[in-house]
Image (cartoon, rainbow, N blue to C red; front, side, top):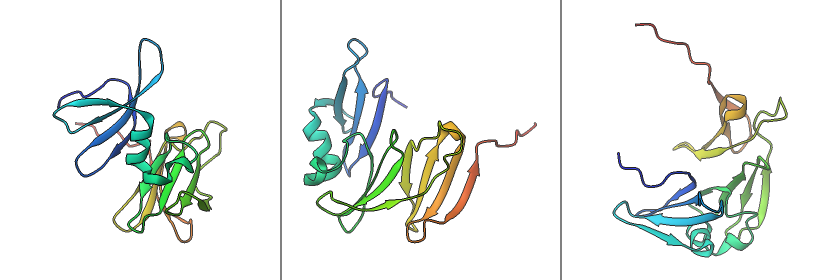
Length: 154
């Protein structure tokens, strides 16, 4: 596998492009990039945010938010520092806050969200070694994965 960039985060994929942010190691400022895996192009914040959120990006709390774009044009977002998951309408307006996750130790943060083929929401909270699956309708936990995986002896 070819390394595209060191220090990349907040990755977002479209049909033909991968967008990401990376810290410039010289000045620690964020830089925005896109790639089709054949070439790498530095872009501005507006292009990155437009690709990720469309015209709704100015109403979304942060272009750094994890983003799931739904088929109906709505968005589910989560910014790891706030660890609150929101449903937004097509314009970016917040229409629902989800109360999910584990917040037991004061250091818990939702770092990543994903939607599976059954429209269940998965969250990753590495500071508490937790991955969970939730119903969007009921907010009930459907599946818990423990990071303490038993070691296989050979």
